[in-house]
Image 1: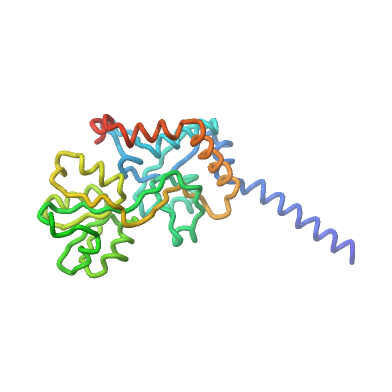
Image 2: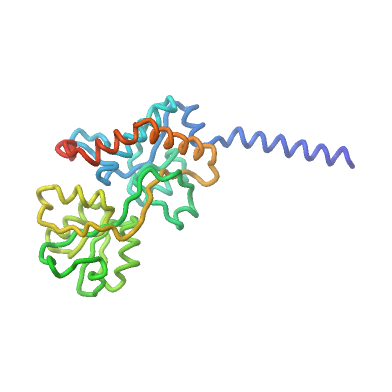
Length: 266
């Protein structure tokens, strides 16, 4: 009886060891493969976007390039619509999500997040006809206002939460949302502060008004499968390293202080 019990314990231990080897984390898989596959939606200026040569560029993309170099692997960007990021990760189409994703409690139930690499918040772009009429997001909580958002984003969630009385329309890309306001089909567009600030600098959007004060607190981070703690550990140490050695500040200045890159963006 004791021998059979010990044998069962030994078999269980062997199975656990075997599973640990065969179910390596995303970072281990990428190192073994020689390629880090990252799911991204290249429509979030200046984090990930497409330049005039069709390349995906941006602040988060540069962080991912530094990450892949630190791992000694190539970086492969897998472009998908924002709503397909989580399903794509679960279907193993890519190793991690790197797409300006905000850490929320709801999302955290479905995937793990790294430490935040930047904190942003939602701001409002207004049609010029609302000058002096709307001075805060609370003023837009009225059935007479039409609000444009990008589907699947925290901007959409924030609009539903703070502007329940307004008429909400969701669009596939933030560019389309801004265009609705420019063309007078919407009164306001809600999206992350960095995007709205840069969108306002474009000639076709220059007449829009910006409520600069963010009305939400949103940390952005890389997304991984639940339980992949080895990969989380590696990525968090990487983020700490680039924060300490000046790499993060250099990349941040490149995309948030300089604006020369705008002419090369599609």
